[in-house]
Image (cartoon, rainbow, N blue to C red):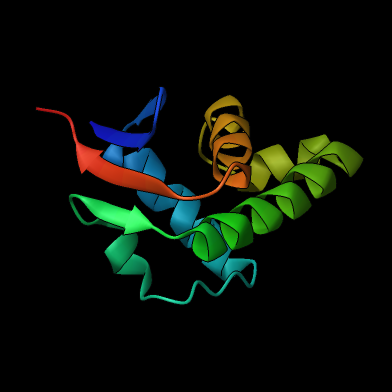
Length: 101
């Protein structure tokens, strides 16, 4: 399990779900300022800039999903509730990715 952590807010996400989200966002045109595989590294600090760009890309996906949910859900294979939670979390800025032990 991966943990996305900031001060008193932690989100648990399956590594496969996190990978699917990152892959989907990059296919949609998101270009983080670090190689995407860094975002799956243990004890990696996601800077405020990267977090904000992830949140912005995620907001676009969420907005488009609301316009045509049936089409979106036929393409999106991950939990949209978890995705929305991560987008909100990332919008708050810098966080750390670690592995739950």
